[in-house]
Length: 216
Image (cartoon, rainbow, N blue to C red; front, side, top):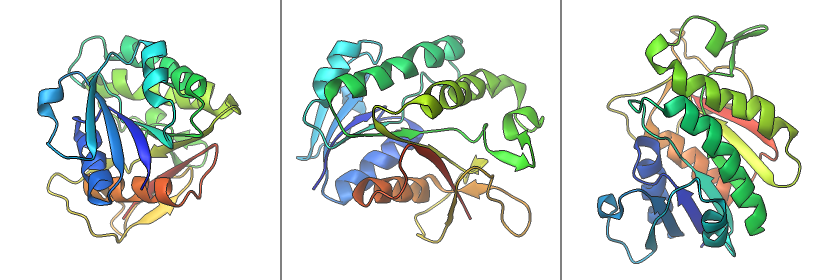
């Protein structure tokens, strides 16, 4: 059993990660804005806390085996760019202050390469209406995490899209910096398989201070 702090446990990806953690018998402290949205489970402890409070998050993370961040302020939040830019460095800071050994971050696909020297974020494939959430998370990875040596971090980029009606298959491929596409040229994954791979990384670490990605 691992004892983890999960930030953003009621979001689209965060809730799938939470379900996977609980199914495997891990103990979870979930940092959320609204604890009423969490399921009832004896392995789950709710913590209504603002991620911008570095000292509070650090205290919650003390003694944990890992921090998993699925933080997002919401894709429709008009301040998404500012909040991601400001809060992800604070999450990193809190994890380091806590003394926790590992930080696993639900990343984005924007900084993956879709052609030699061309990142997805610069390819024109990402709709302008979500760029405010894509670019700052990518900048955090490129500008902050790649220069971070004081904690064992991973940035787990999903495929280009999540399947709308996906399920857990366990049949997927992992990569590093290149967008994974299927035989038809599509890059996709179910949120359930993404969560499965993320918790696999928690259980049996393979990646250290690097990004990895997933796809069918």
